[in-house]
Image (cartoon, rainbow, N blue to C red; front, side, top):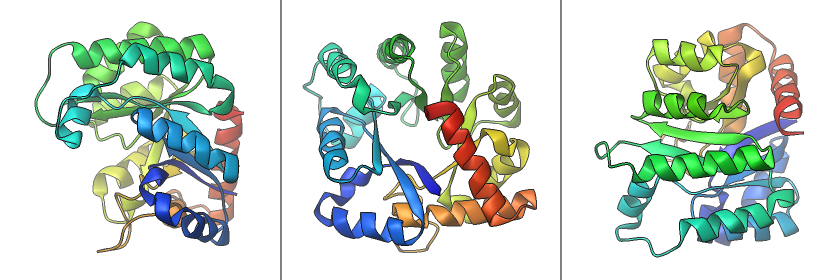
Length: 251
């Protein structure tokens, strides 16, 4: 049972049946769809009704980065969206994608305030969190430790080795994306972190393992293969270990 722990399957709304069937054919049994805003959160809940293998995690992307990517000011109320997530807690596997993003410079405390609110929600609901920490790894770790988060998945973690060690020593989990086939940073992560703390993801439609091709959940198997090679394990052993991680953290 292969698992894609993090993808933006709402990008494939018009091709959802094809993408889901491709994943099934590849042996993928769980697709974790990651919400980043009210629109994607609601789409994922609708997708789940038709395709139970889609497991939503609902969240709010780092505010400044979301505004930048949406190319305009956001017009939704964070507290109302938090309340929506709370009301749908029984339908979701976790809280995410949430975190910090300093790609366009370190912002004021708006992102960090939002991050804390969402972490407190996860503690209240006893749900795992899927953390985005692009160019903000230290601050993200600081806040996670400050709030005392235990059920943590560091999504596409790109921090330095000392920060990786710090997160690893907290017994948090990490995802290895399909771009590991060529990205030395993620190869290092797969080498440094015990198999009992690893998941695989596609981040679909991004970070494809194949040149000039959009990513999709079926391709998560490429990350499993690379981890197996790095760890000196059989593919089946790698798959079974990661499935046990799923049961440990999300079941």
